[in-house]
Image (tube, rainbow, N blue to C red; front, side):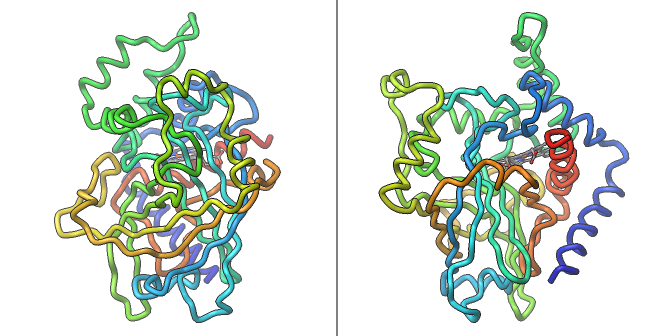
Length: 330
Ligand code: HEM
């Protein structure tokens, strides 16, 4: 299993190396992400503000029909698998308000198994903000604060007009209320994954978590009454009453669904969905449990689950997260 993990990572890395000639340096992208959030020390390049939690994952009876990953198998001990997870606010500013809009909330999870970990890093929107690394570099660069501490609104407007697909995520978030809880919103993996079963049958799917609590939104008046940091306390109080659970769901792709563009949404309501299992978040964990490593969604995948080889935004995440880890831990 471990060698498979490494093979996947290396294959993704090679694919990137051969197509990277015209793309910007990963370092430049990470620098731009930090700059957009005010270059704060000792924080992540995105998801700088967050809460570390622990829980468990129990696969559904249908999961092994789609993927041979041991994490989806019911053949083992039948015991739930341990999960370390982190909820977060998008961006590199650790002081961002929990009421901020349009900002994605993040849900990163490490599902443990004796064969190795399975890591997913999801956000509270079905689409990402950019389609290529160059576009992400430009997107972050126009958001760098000027001497007055604010980005240039005209530059942001001009970028959006020239890159209309980059406005889809904000439009989606702006059409919905600010989540009242990290446990009261759905999260998406955004990329198209390939799930492969024990017979070698491959299924292209987008992954998401569906909150058992439903979509808990704040009205404008409720939001005004909240402090800028309330998610951590809300979660602590919620978990004191019992676990917060989410279904992990695979939305199955059909011919023609784009697999290389994370700004493109699939028509989910018209697609078949399969529940892969239940994530149960039980308690808060010290931040240190989540801070010593990255949630690397590229390398930490078992055989039976693969990211898209043709989506340039996927493979680059691994080196970008490593650069950010080294910056925040040195
Ligand atoms: C080229 C594409 C991307 C780049 C360069 C990038 C960059 C980063 C960086 C530098 C970090 C901090 C890592 C760390 O210090 O541990 C991070 C974290 C994060 N990213 Fe990305 N990202 C990309 C794509 C995405 C996508 C597509 C999603 C949504 C599915 C996403 C969601 C997140 C989340 C939720 C975190 C917080 C992780 C945590 O809690 O530790 N990112 N990203």
